[in-house]
Length: 152
Image (cartoon, rainbow, N blue to C red):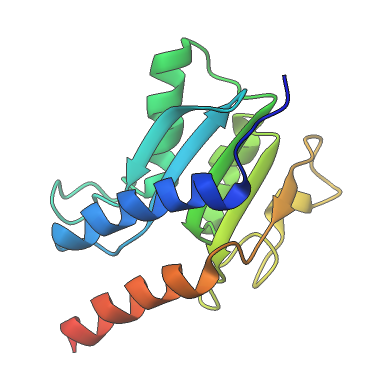
């Protein structure tokens, strides 16, 4: 069945998660995992609130999807993230065999999907992941700017 929703539709869902993170004083990054046109996992940064260093949006969306789908691999799934994944999250994406990643804003300090590193498309790794960037990038960037301006 062809997915009737666009990348922008699911990125807007990830942006909703990022806004919740912002409202809780977290860096506003959100993620949703989609399988066959249905959101099966959601996550938002929660590192500060829970003092959990690995509670990045992607990691939480992967965990949520695993619990909902009752599996540890995500062949055929797409992960939508408002910010380019870091090396830790890119590694988790590869280990869980996510087929596609769509992200909004590039991360010039820690981006591991083409900006600093390109873990998701590294030919030395057996799994290959399709990557689409720049989807609603300005909205994602605006949320991050809002957060960091308030911190200064």
